[in-house]
Amino acid sequence: MIKAFKEGVDIHKEVASKVFNKKLEDVTHEERGKAKAVNFGIVYGISDFGLGEQIKVPRKVAKEYIEEYLRKYSGIKKYMENIDIEAKEKGYVTTIFGRRRNIPELKSANFMVRQFGSRAALNMPIQGTAADIMKLAMVEVQKQIEKRKLRTKLLLQIHDELLLEVPKEETEEVKKMLKDSMEKVVKLSVPLIAEVSTAQDWYGCK
Image (cartoon, rainbow, N blue to C red; front, side, top):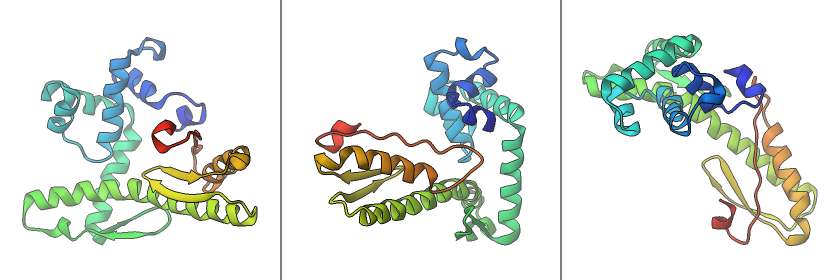
C-alpha cells in the first residue's frame, strides 16, 4: 500500500484489484467505490453489517470483502490488533505526535460501550493524526502569509481543506505557497498531496 501511494497509484483502485482479484486496469468504477468504502470503513472498525448497508450488498458478501482485505493487507490487520491490545493495557491511544485520548469505555461493563471504545481506539490515531497535520499546516500557512506581508486571509479549515480569501494579484504566489506548506509540513513514509483550486466563492472551488 505504501508502494502504491509513492507511485501515485489510485489507492482505491489498487485495493479493489486486490480484493476482487482483478488487474488494476480491469477494475470498474463500481468496484472502486466499494473498495473505497472498505478502505475507510475497515480502519474505523466498520462491521460486515455496516459495510453491507453502506455499499448495498448482503452481509455475507460484505464479510467476504473485509476478510479478503485483511488477508491481502495483513499489516493493517496486525496494526488494528496491536492498537486494540495497547489501548486496553494503557487506557488511552495517541497520535503520531503524542496527543493522547483516554478511552475509559474499554473498561465498561456494557458490551456495546466497550465496542464503541474499541472503534474509538482504532479511529483516533488516524483521524487524530490527520487533525494534527492540518493544525500544523494552518500554522505554517499563516506564518508564510505574515512573512511575505500578503493581504491574503486564512478563513476556514473544513476537514482536510483550508479556505483562503486571496486578492487576485496574490493568487499565483499563494497557490504555490499553500501547496508547498501543506505538502511539506510533515514528512511521512508516504507523500502528502495537496490540490489547490480557485474560484469566486467556496462552492466554485469544489
